[in-house]
Image 1 (spheres, rainbow, N blue to C red):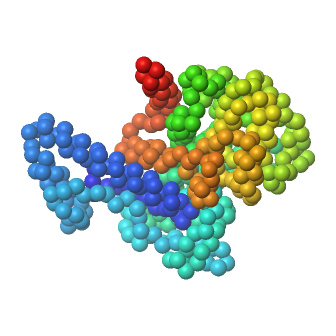
Image 2 (image 1 turned 45 degrees about the horizontal axis):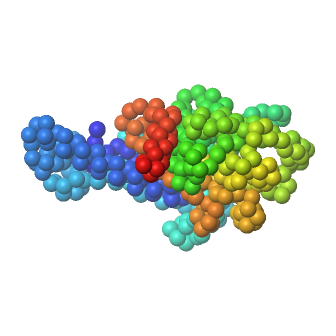
Length: 421
């Protein structure tokens, strides 16, 4: 396993996914440096070789095995891998995209990053144009990049999509398309081997692929870690109840309730599907009922994504009316589209909720300035998965993190006991 140059792991970041890719690359650099140092320490002791001599030996072997004359960097120091591929992205005024790779990636395992929900103003055409792109723009940019990487001779292509595009169009109810599945077939046609995503909207999408492996990551550990900082998970000073905001989120909230050993309640919403939601004020919810008890308790809700926010706003107001002391929400993919941020600002002033915990899987600069918003970082999780995929290692403990969560809860409980002593 190469811990320094040369490495066959290469990252191509589309304009929308560049911010998240840079954060993941930072973690990858730390991980590779740590593993190199650890390996150097262990082997130097085991074979009674001076550490400096061992570093030279590792670099010598790298120089011998490379197809180049020799690798860049010093011979007696750690050579940090350069993961990011230099690429040029062109946006034409008619809306077309073009991707050019400025270095050789032949034979490399390439990970392509794209955040399709990044609606911030991006620098395109080498800084000549500033544009905010739509989901469709990002998807097309991704497809063009996949093709460029394929044509350049990559040995394998993995898509890193924190948000799987069109994931809400996964179930056919009438004369409509299965767009989530259609995109999957396009990825397969272009030679994509694997997709790494976060809290995909429906498990049914996994079954839409013929050959692609989909790694669906969960931000539950990172969310609970932030939750433990703002509320007493032990129940000694505050009663906490997990509330599913609707029937579709019941499995996700059941996971939190079982992991935290807390009661589970559920909000049932009666909807009028003749109403099409345009913004948070035009929600199609007509009546809400609560199955469970939140009176005098802290209510914790978890959902996979938040768009206009109308459903969540109505749920939070309802829980406060039912006597909840605090309402805390966790959102894996915080889109906050339209005027959602303004509406949540107003709801916070009215005391409808205490905090919202979201991940950095969606790049949203304005959210980070809000007093009521807590951002938790999942780039380390993605970096771990990428290295394990690249080196053919098991992902089991990263995909099912119940053991890690249990240790976190026990640690908080023991810390409280120590404080009492």
